[in-house]
Amino acid sequence: MAYDIKITTNFEQAIADFNRLRKTLKLAIGNAVDKALAETISSLKTELKTIVNETIKVTADVPEPERQDLRNTNVAKSKADIVKYLFGQDIMKSDYIQKTAKSNTYNPHNNIFTVNNSRLKLYKPIGDSSSLQEVLDEARNRIKDGILIDERSGKMYKPNPADVKGIKLECSSDTGVTLNSEHKFEAYKNSDRITRRGLTPDQRAAIVTVKQEDVRHMINNSLNIDLLVDTVLNGDYDTAISILSRFNKNGDLAQPIKQVTNLKQNTNLTPNVQALKNVNELIKNLKIQKIVTPDEIRYVLFSTYKEETEQYTEFFEQLRTNIYLWIVTNENYWFDAIYKAVVQALSTYDPTAKM
Image (cartoon, rainbow, N blue to C red; front, side, top):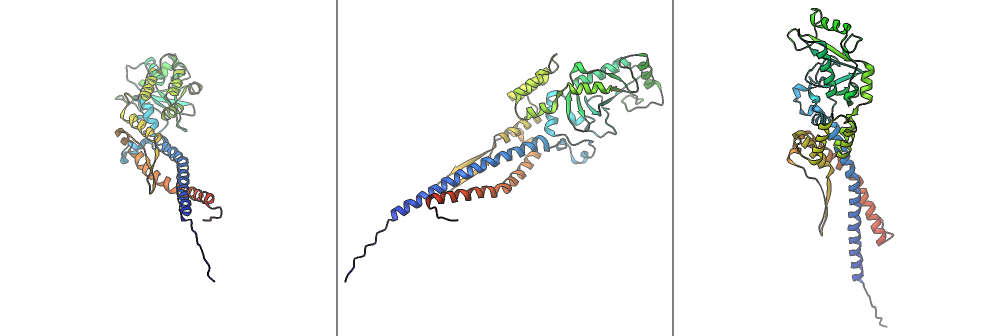
């Protein structure tokens, strides 16, 4: 007996199913990687902003042999650059940074004053023709123009000129010019036993202090420079101008407001501030570029920066290191996202499929 056996195949359907699976896998994997990379690049940006705005210290600009002469190296370079640009006060030349024996202000040409436990003390070089009135007036004007920095925390304050009071000679209970303070001042000038660190030929200096309650009042009512600097570094220039304007009662902060406006318009910036601004823009614009070809999907981490940015050399050194660490730290997370996407894609093709 003869039998007719007919075998039919549907390879076309199998091929169609396989092509559908391949497209599904490619789309699922691409979407999973897109999402995973978007989540992790935010953490990279946060880490890089911390590096440039907090981690890199003022020592970045100081040659290695000279770093041992610095008294305090815990000030962020970005903060020092912004403070100098806005207020014209150079933290690097202050007694807070330079090596000194105590928390006093000796440098008569720098108006960043160290405060320790609400105590503020500055030395004024004097000579035979010096008068108490001119010494007190100069101290008052320097503080009005200057910045207070807390010895322990490093926080900075810009005092309201109207709150600068309580100026007196050390060991004198009187503010202003009185018989008692005049007597004390003459002792500074004439006693051979009183030799102070000054810049006159006889190394004489009057020591000027501020009453503790007046120092506390100045700080409590001052402009918070740390908040202002953070706002500027975040590129929120309108808020920074608003903060300055609230304290600009008599036009004392007109120049800092102008400087923030320059930052907003990206004009008339110093090289350091231009480089710092460019670095923050580089971080802000950091992106993942997705390149799709018939054979592969490639992801490229990129951003753009201007030539001035390269002045922040220490940032670029740490940038390379942190990108490497970012990849190492997140590669398992990315592969796990791909694995889950593949399993999900296979389940739509064949629910019994296992990996």
